[in-house]
Image (cartoon, rainbow, N blue to C red; front, side, top):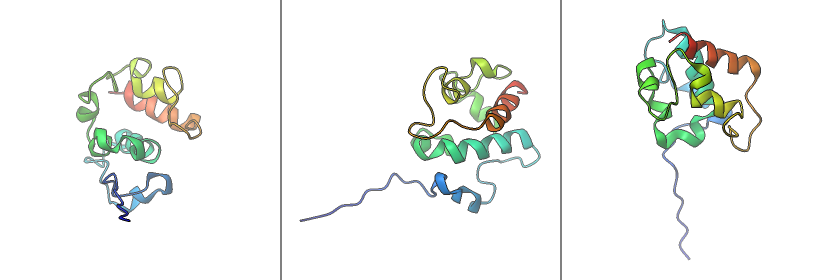
Length: 115
């Protein structure tokens, strides 16, 4: 019998805040606190499942805006699928986990609306 373990290539477990051990890997410009705060929330709640779609690598506003599928629409949180899926308007994310806090949702909304 051969047992093969295959990992997804993820370098951290987003459910345990291990992403904090990777210094600033989710925010290229530390002076952009809105992006840094938003990316910390995304890393903690989303990157575990969306790692392969590149979410963990987006560390600038432009990368998020250009990530496609209306994920982040500059200046329009309500038109951004990141928000509609997280707040269960257009999906049920994070899947199999509790909905993100209102405070975290507002942080994400403020970031997107400020773009």
